[in-house]
Image (cartoon, rainbow, N blue to C red; front, side, top):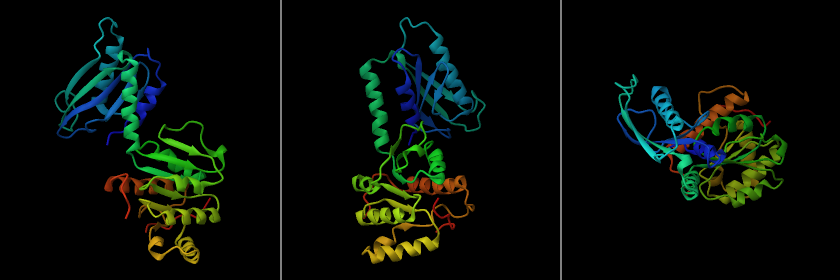
Length: 294
């Protein structure tokens, strides 16, 4: 799946007359850095997203900026750029790509809206993570995940903890009734609970398990915390088959450390494995000992 969220963010920031070129990988043969559909947006001073870096991207960006420097008279709306990575660019991948370059400032309002709609529709098909908790680990995790193709609904009653500038695929919910967010969540969503209070973690865990249609549910904490939660949830009438859905501790095996950044990397890797292995929007019929709550 192409990461186009940065492109969408860039398009939203542009004025209709600002010069810009949208670069899209239209064809790919052999070993190439990024797949078909990958986009990047280039302005005269900035670029959003990547088609793989290296000499390939340098050549594409340089071509786009040379085009923007040309006279606007009889401007072509689009151009093609065919590149063989080995002979022409000195890259060892050995593949070939065909790039489409589109002048964004030549689009009509309707064309601009249509392109934004495509990006919006792609975002709807990304895995959706509901993250409860904006403490140190939550902050570190969002820093990692906002660079990946996913949607995040980030929930915490402490609205002052949310950073001012976030990627467009991240929505914040400052609420003192986070269980309502769970109730409204779509089937097949991913949940991660790491709030500042064990009592709230328990309440959220119960609501997620009773809803019963999560793709995955992770709970920050140790094996001891899991055992205590299982006992309390059982007392509240949550069945044993639901308790097996809890992933606690969280994070891939082999990454030790309780620093927020270390935990964030371990959990992000775990989620990326899930999102790679499983289709998103599916219907839903341990790892290292992690830290306790913040």
